[in-house]
Length: 112
Image 1 (cartoon, rainbow, N blue to C red):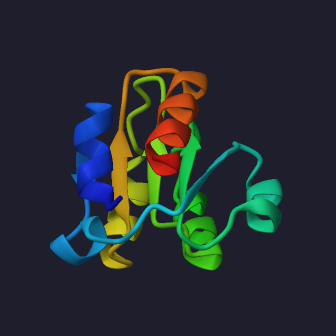
Image 2: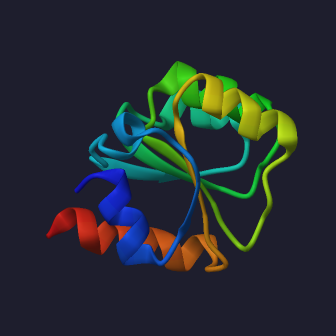
């Protein structure tokens, strides 16, 4: 399932991402807010669910190769994060749902 389809199924807002970024495949998921932990555990193609919204998130997203960053619980991105993800062409999504709820839905969708 690609990121655009995932966003639609989640009812998530697309905050950034070109057509190319939104066509990337979501192959798994990772939920975490401790950036050093995410760097060691998230895998390429994962949807990263987090409440962290500072520019360092973009660096971790780039290092891990996640397919997108999904801000949970209505978190708004820091301007620095939005700008960095746009320049690196990584999709940024946002949802009012809890991280727990998002992870459950994503797991079900990707496992279909």
